[in-house]
Image 1 (cartoon, rainbow over the protein chains, first blue to last red):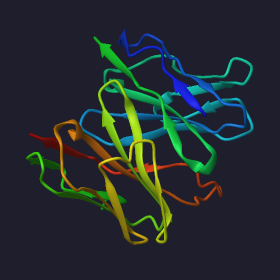
Image 2: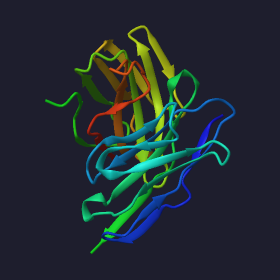
Image 3: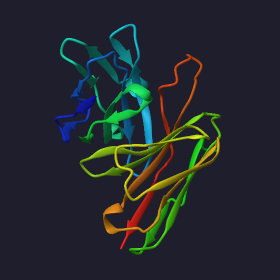
Image 4: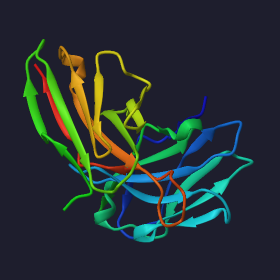
Length: 112
Length: 116
């Protein structure tokens, strides 16, 4: 069965600093990977997705992620964060039958 | 108007009560999903439906039932609510997009359910 691991439950960072949120997956077949963001008291919004092609994927709000098949990772990065990036971020993988399996989430806390 | 709507947005109910959460979508998608979110556990799939006649159990379906009344409507019921069903519930949809893939899921705003 496919699974997703987000090792960091919380990542504190200062405004304008770079950030990396880690995601590792387990799968024996081709994978489709996603990062979603959940702002306080809101639903989930897609940040970016990897289906095929270039391993560097650019998303909304200046985020990007790199698919690394050999390390089974899909880490999310942003070179300079803003206060408004404070949110919870979820990595997810599509299983067979097109079901999303989510990681447990990483809370990004951006302070001035 | 939002593409995926959920009603109610907040609900407090008592143990043993029956409650229904409703989801509607205007995206024209054929696939719909119900998840629950608990702190530290991420989102877990309760039920999913790939069309009106297709209903499937997810990871944590015990204590829940669903009904797909139409392509655009998918409701979740708790027949006899219990306190550990207190959670944030999300509906989601997926279908073909302009790129041809059907993998991206679109989420509603969530329903916060408290069972006392």
